[in-house]
Image 1 (cartoon, rainbow, N blue to C red):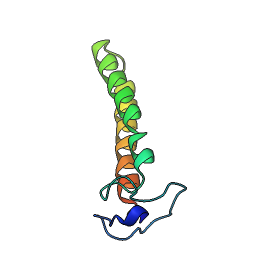
Image 2 (cartoon, rainbow, N blue to C red; image 1 turned 120 degrees about the vertical axis):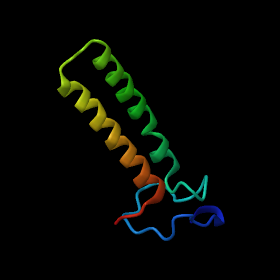
Image 3 (cartoon, rainbow, N blue to C red; image 1 turned 135 degrees about the horizontal axis):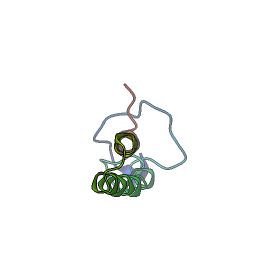
Length: 84
């Protein structure tokens, strides 16, 4: 753990990537990898709103929702570094 901070989520149970763990917060393992997913969620949300507003086919809404789910999952993974 970086700078003496302890982890809220327990020991890391997955691959340790290139970023140091728990440097900025004891709640977020890889801070920059975690927050870098926020633009993906926002862009998918904008795409979903536009697809619904313009009455696109259902597949476009499903695409944007799946991208949001992927980004949320990535946030959870990089914040905790826990593997089930």
